[in-house]
Length: 198
Length: 180
Image: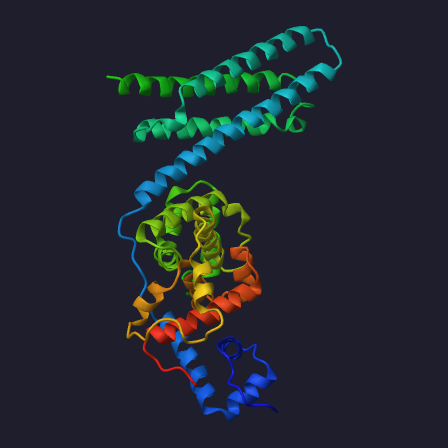
């Protein structure tokens, strides 16, 4: 074995971390200087781990929390619009392929009206930029409940297999309900906007 | 650091946060705020940079809660996001410090820098940013060289050599004698 040289720092660190070579281990066993250096490296690591933690100098949740809420609202609306579009396609397909009973034409017309109204209100809601409005407690609660209702309706619209065989008019009901909830949301936000302008 | 909350509690907290419970999100923030900030202070240049990393980390945590599978340490998952955010700052700012360190030390193990008698905190802060990150991630956080290489977009050899050179510098700055 040639021990004419000392182990270098990289070799000693590898040994410290349990990955050293047989040569390094053998050399350290026989070399007091390298054994001392290995011990020093272990001590530095222990001292690094013992350094005190830092504390954020400022309260940050007051900044981060509202940003998180805003992002979540934006995701909610993006999701709601996407789901409603998918639901509309599903419902239209369902009505279009049904056998034509005597009231089919009237039902189809009612569905088209409800869907059109829902889509108009959705555009109106987007126009008032609800994600950029801070609401007071009562208004926020009302909006949260309306959004929950909207989510439940969209979930049903997205799964027509659960009701289409039992109730052919269910699609019209759901789209009318959806338009009603969207109308309420528009009212809440436009009222809030009007109050804020005073 | 070890995870400060048990796995079952972490799963419950994340499930509530995913369901839209804002209090759960805030609790998550409170649990890890100090650890993320400390890590960010060690990996970045200034307190302001660390605050930015803290903010970016928790925004990402809130966006990505669904990707935590509830199997490993929640702190480990949060820490990876924080480290990634800090590393992204290096790439954005195109730091050159480590290259400079390479030039200074190359070919001469102990010739650079006069011996100092700094305390460890000061010596650590004196290291170039990316070199300090390698030391902290490996020696304190327990990252392997492979993990550091992946995080930094560098090679494993780079991580190993940076660690060794950093320890050589620390020895000089701490006023400790080198083997001859």
